[in-house]
Length: 192
Image (cartoon, rainbow, N blue to C red):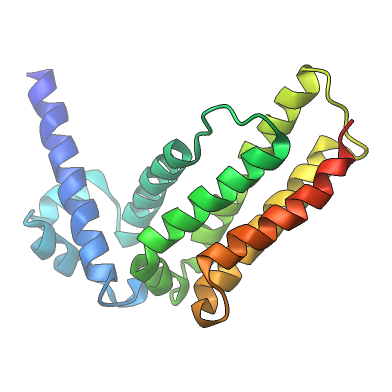
């Protein structure tokens, strides 16, 4: 019986997440109602409230789900250098934001924008920092602390991607990858 309960809950969560994406492709998060979400997901309001306190609680759940998918997407199949890892991270982050463009644009127009941006920014920082620490364990030294370097790299990568999201007419994704590749090549001299 336990397995069926888990399956039903997973189906409910999937229906809600799919409905959430569908609705946010048309309107801002602030304008979304629980009724609308439940109707689109074809679930009862009572079922929604059994799992979530309100739409903000659901949004937190949804963001955690997306964060987990994002982490899986940026998992690096063993880059041979810090430069290659950060370029890979940039490409995967850019790809993730492009795949979810309408959703991200609508969330950015809502009062939940800072929560979304903080989560992705922290994940990029954590990924870079852990990668730098791994290189450090393998004998690579840095001319600056790994914490500072991770902060600098993650901030640069994330702000560049945000500039692309906010002003896509000014940047092409190929140009961003090419330019970040040049910048990272210069920064590679900070290792020995």
